Length: 122
View 1 (cartoon, rainbow, N blue to C red):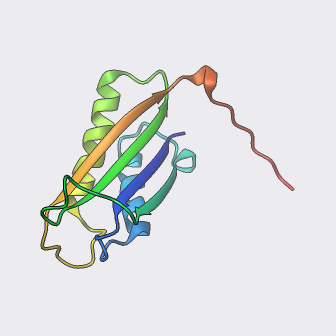
View 2 (tube, rainbow, N blue to C red):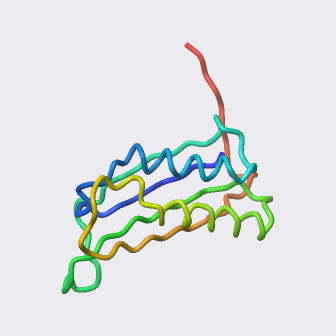
């Protein structure tokens, strides 16, 4: 834990999803709230999306961070703010974008009693 899921609109053609995840993971590590190898991140490009009625070209990046319950509100606020700040740096975009990008971060509690995990070796 935590699990981070990044969704981004397909019109962000210059976005490097691996760099986006790396930036997010660094932001999480810098909070000192997580063990490095416990962070699991993945990114999904949303091929079909609509912002409003598609009257202007816009884009989005939406991060969902799933945490096991037990974190304080202050910790969750700090993590969300750190992720948003890192998104605002836009090091994951290889060239300038000529339209607005909506950046969103959602921190979601997962009840510990409903999370199951096993590590298996073959």
